[in-house]
Amino acid sequence: MKCGVVVFPGSNCDHDCYHILKHVFELDTEWIWHKDDVDLSGFDLIVLPGGYSYGDYLRAGAIAQFSSVMKKVIEFANSGRMVLGICNGFQVLVESGLLPGALIQNHTQKFICKTVSVRVENASTPFSCECLEKSVLNIPIAHHQGSYFIDIDGLNQLIDNEQIVFRYSGCEGEVTGLYNPNGSVDNIAGIVNENKNVMGLMPHPERCADPAWPNLDGQLIFKSMIQSLQPGILL
Amino acid sequence: MKAKIYITFKDGVLDPQGKAVHHALKDLGYNEVSGIQMGKYLELTMDGVSREEAEIRVTEMCEKLFANTVIESYRFTIEPEE
Image (cartoon, rainbow over all chains, first blue to last red; front, side, top):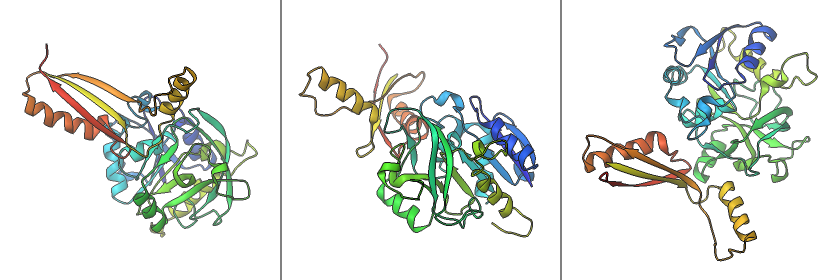
């Protein structure tokens, strides 16, 4: 299994993602610089990390979507291969049209950096198959533009296609406005595309996946992807 | 040609910045203000294109890059440069 971590100017969670894939899970992992005309055919998983690609100018993710590496990532995703976008990576995925909706400024107007609870809404995707359905994971968020927006028709489609993977919740799994940190529509924290091979989420699983820390909930997402990519298992 | 482009949130999309500024205006006593839409303003200087061409090109630019039409709407004017 070969993983690629994309590096945009302004990415700042790229090292964390690389560390978890390469050193914690001991996977063959490579950096992919945004300007490189790289052949992605040998990769199984591409990670778009968090940060502030291109300074978040215009809108978060707006400029990154046209970088040369993203043309390749879009092809890669459209061919059914796995792409994970975390935080700014999620913003790049919605801007590039690989995922529906948009991410706008938090309703609190503030940058939020804290560990939140999210409920697993769909444990059958390649990104969540090691989780228990409706279980609660504690994962840090760190963003200013993380409020997920989609119109009502789009939301109904997400629900009908079971594309919502994580919702912000209380520690007992209560999904209410009280536990919505940023004003996201329907408490949405992470979604997949219709084919379930592309996931974007605002929480940072790479920040709670190193055994040096007490919280290892993020490992479940990495373990799910590894499990799904085992030889013989088709996405 | 000079293009002046205005981008604002669509109705129904929460604009927390506009809301915060509105609160400040109320604190200052400007109670007649019933709503604020904050947005972006861009000015483009374009060379070697007619007004018709500029309209087509600017529409493309707005759709592709300047506005995210999931959440934003745009409008623009095109004038000859002074």
